[in-house]
Amino acid sequence: QWWDSTPYVVVVTCLGTLVVSYVCEPKSWRRSLVPFAAVASVFVAIMIYLKGAAFWVDLVPHLLGHFKYISKAAPGDFPNIGLSISEQAKIPFEGVVQISAGSWYLFLAAALGTAQLVIRSPRQGLQLLVPMGLGGLTFLYARRFGIFLAPFLGLGIAYLLLWLRDQIGTRTPRYLWKGLFISALVGLLVGGGHLVLLNTASTFWPVETPILVQGMDSARLKTPPGSLIWTWWDHGYPMQYYGRRGTVSDGAYHDGELAMINGFPYATGDYQQAANWMHFYAVRGIDGFHRVYQQLGSTAEGLRFVRHILAAGPEEGAKLIEEKGLEPKSAWLTFFFPPPSEQKRIYMFVDERLVGTSYWWYWLGTWDIGEQEGMRPVFVPFYDMKQEGNQLIGAPSFSVDLEKGMHSTRQQVVALSSVVFRDGNTWRERTYRDVGMIFEYDLVSGWGVLSSPEIHESVFNKLFFLGMADVRYFRPTTMLRGVYQLWEVHSDQVGPSQ
Image 1 (spheres, helix red, strand yellow):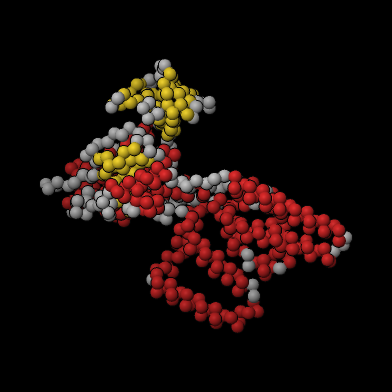
Image 2 (image 1 turned 135 degrees about the vertical axis):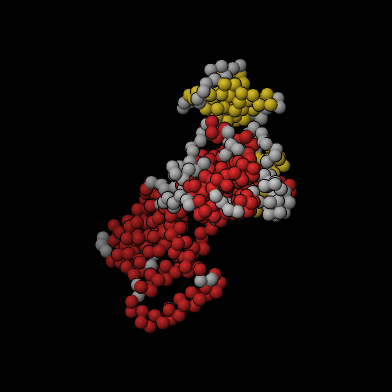
């Protein structure tokens, strides 16, 4: 999340501006070089004392990592998570104008004023290089940098008005410059008023709805202290705050590899694999994955093996370990299937927001290193379902012909391979053709989902919408179907003979 990077932004803005100011005053270099070097040395020493020497060793790689994050460059084997974040989206030039100034008039006025400032007072203008440079990243990389265009907007417009006012007393005809000054001032008031209206026209509600906050508070009440809640990373901070429980990732920690690990248990269709995966990561961490990568010679081969053995379970897993020549076998077996004494209590939180973000968590969770791609699902929810004869209808406006197996909206008609529906306490399936989308619905709760076959088989869909689970691995703790659910997760254990 944005607030995790604010300390770095403050440091870059302050120290960067200080350095630029120092460079722009060459006459003061000789007398201030010693004090400047002394202050810098003290700062370096303090950071070594507080953070250790590794702070400076890791600084450049850390900054490069942040740059790759904001630039959305491919970091290696795993995808750049910035691709999935709306604030990280690159917007066109017109969009930058709208989010920064609200109108072309204010934007052009700011540009003219800034140009005047730099031309007339180069040294003072150069001192704005760092904050305006950060604002310039809006044009190149992400909309979140639009906030740094505020100095460009405020100082640029102010300097333009100041310059026009100064011309009244020094240039003729004075009435012309007065007219320009008054026109610019009126334009500022009108443009500023328009900008205020734009910012007050929309209400930005909290992302976490009250009912989901209730679910997170329920997690606090229904789980013992020290438990781990497996939730998608954008729930990380709220779950830590409202649920008072640990999570696997959050707004600070969600790089491509961790997002893949986070999304995989939701995306896989295998309950056993999902449960073993969560317990393996909870005990061994990302270092456990890296150990396997190193042992098997590549990230792709290591990840493939982790997925395979956790789906196989301890008995078959022992054979897989022998095939790979991993020694000692018993140590590797307990490495992949940690004993209860090492495990945490794990609960999986599934909720309605995961429906909206399914495009991303499923893509990340199914990431294939060799192909450098994940699977792109179709997962579209519908509400207020009703049946009229052989037609299902609901919102957003759609219909399903139960005789022909066709799903229709105003934009398109989709052939269905099957319809899955609730009949009392059981689920039934009506098949139409071998290939196509799947529509599942529950008339009692009034929801329906159009999905591609792969995500239909996912653990998330089976838990959240169908309420189906293998109770050896997933046991219901809190169930509010269609809103949120909390499932206790159990993994396979190594038997005494293994």
